[in-house]
Length: 188
Image (tube, rainbow, N blue to C red; front, side, top):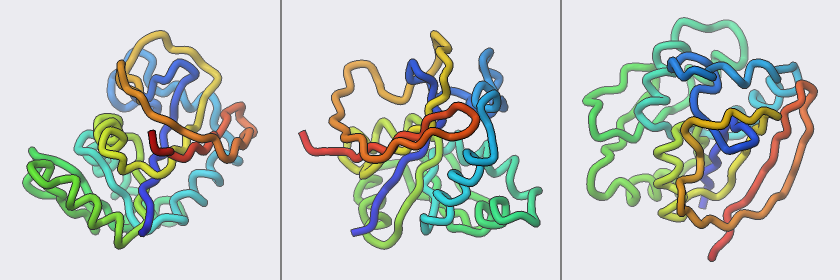
């Protein structure tokens, strides 16, 4: 069996909303205050370690608007070239190169399990999708790129009332002040 790995930019208080600043959230772009070459290399290595991306509709639409016009560097070329599976019940097509629709209706988790059997999947952002994958026990590992900032409000990765058992495996302090924490999902 391959794995599903979730990667998130996250604040100390668990906010994952609009780390890049393109969604109109009043604190949007907060992660850029902590960028550095170490962090970029960490994300590049992470991307190359996976076979495909699994994305929710909102994240997919944001990426599909931003990335196809970029090229000529390893990060953009990998992002644009790798297979992308978008979980949605509203999109009829996914036009970004090598993108495929995973119908979000009945049986969606069986389809995701089948993809997981074939490939090592990386979920970027997509907090609603991640919450549902966690509920279904489909997340094998979380990579939390934690910025030393408290935002006080915004969409959080873990829903109120959620009970997930994790085991920290590998913390890495990145040069810009972010802490990359790897956590494996555990049973019970």
